[in-house]
Picture (cartoon, helix red, strand yellow):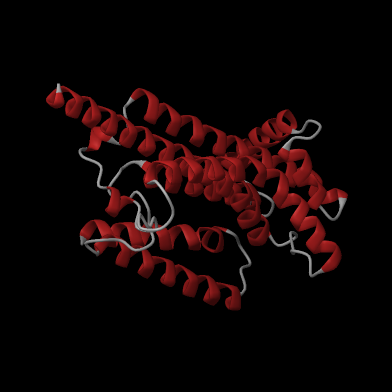
Length: 269
């Protein structure tokens, strides 16, 4: 119960972070954010306090969800501080702006996701800011991926936390549909990794098309800019992490089957 309440509070705080730190937030925006934060907190609390979750995957296989939450929290926090530095500059915000500018310039090369994200900028004045925010967010997502891959390869995730409960950790996976569960896990893993690789390139194209044929995003608003770039960097990394995790679970099942078949052959012999 205490752990579920703590997680719900952290999720609500994450949702409210830009509104709390950025000056000049309108009352209507604050009310909408408070409602979204409350709903996210309730969903998190229900999922973690229940004996069996219904939506959140890998609940009992830490630190999968902790790494993802830390990634999005760090991304949103740093981007918020950089945007806050436009109106309330401090030594910390100035240092973050300089670091983001350096990272953005390094990541801005032809056909890179950061270069494609610059296509969303509607004016030249926003280009430098989007470059620094996108570069910093993308680097955080890459570090997140490398950290999880190292956790899987070097620290034997998820077995270090005990036995892996398939049904608790994959509540959305229906084993009664389709063919062999091993082949389905590998197929889902490949699909997630492919989507995670393509999304950083597809999202800017979708946003650009939306600006032409529909109502464009108001990227001049700091909160819209923060959440757009955070989602652009976090969602692909989250999908690739899920793909790596599913492939790891498939490898464990395949290894267990191999041992069972070998033991059965020995008994027959």
